[in-house]
Length: 320
Image (tube, rainbow, N blue to C red; front, side):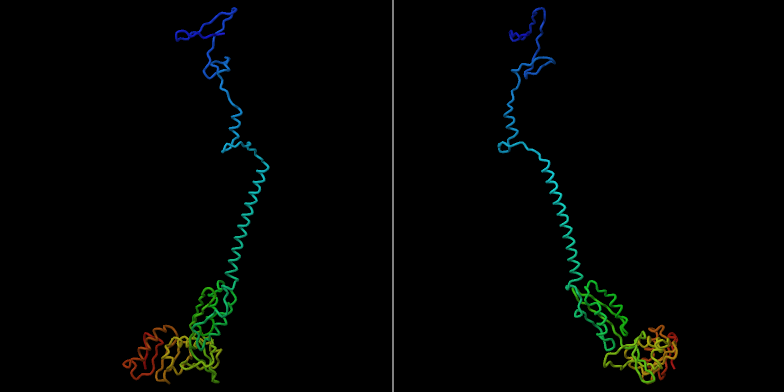
C-alpha cells in the first residue's frame, strides 16, 4: 500500500517491496473521483446527499405546503377535449342560427311588414286635367297597392300611365317609407273630330281618343270634319294634321275656325273665319314653318292686304 510522506514542505512518494511484489501509489482528486481508470475512491471524500430533503423539496408547493405529484388522467383529459369540441360546435350552430334569424327578420321587415307596405291612401297624382282625370291615373297606380314600396316598379307605372290618351309624360317617385307620387303632363285635345251627324270626338296628337271629364270645355280646340272617326284615325292626312295642330300656340289654336286635310301634304288651317289661310303642307320642318308664319302674319309690311300664306316650302313661302 502506498504512503505519502511530507518532509520539509515537499511531498515525496516511496515505494516498498513486499513479498516480492511492488505496489505503486495512485493519486486521488479532491472530490473523491478516480484520476485513472481502475483506481479506488476514498468514501470519505464523497458528497453526502439527503434524499428525504430532496423529495420534500420536489413535492412542496409555492407556499411550502407539501403536495402530491401531479398524476395525468388521460380519460379525464379526453372527456374535457370532447366537451370543448361539443361546446365549439354548439357555439357555431348558435351563431349560424342567429345569422339566419337576423336575415329572415330583415327580409320580413323590408318586404312583408306594414312599415314599407304601399297603401292606396299613400298614392297621389299631380298634373291631371279635364281630359285626363286623376281617377284614370290612380286606377293604374293602385295596382301596386299592397306591395312593399321596395318592390314597386316606378318604370312599369310610368309606362302604363303614358298609354292613357292625352298623357305626354309621366314620372313615378317613391317616398320612403310607404308613399308613391305620380306626376303627369296632360295635354288638351289636338283636335275634335266632327262627323256629319254632329258627333264630336276629342283626340290627342297621337290619334288616341280622349275620355273627357264631365263638363270639359271644347273652346279653343280646332275641329276637323270627317265622315268616320275610326277610319279617319287610320288616315295619314289626319295624323299629319294632328301633329301640326298640337304644336301650335294656344293663341293661334283659338283663332282656328276650320281645318282641311284632304291629303297628307296639304294640311290647311283657316284663322278667324277665313281672314287668314295657312297652308302647312305636312308636319316636316314644323318649327321653321311656324317661325315663318309668325313673322309674316304679324308684320303688316309683309302681309299687307294678302290673306293666304303657303309655307309648305318654308324657305320659299308664298303670300297671295
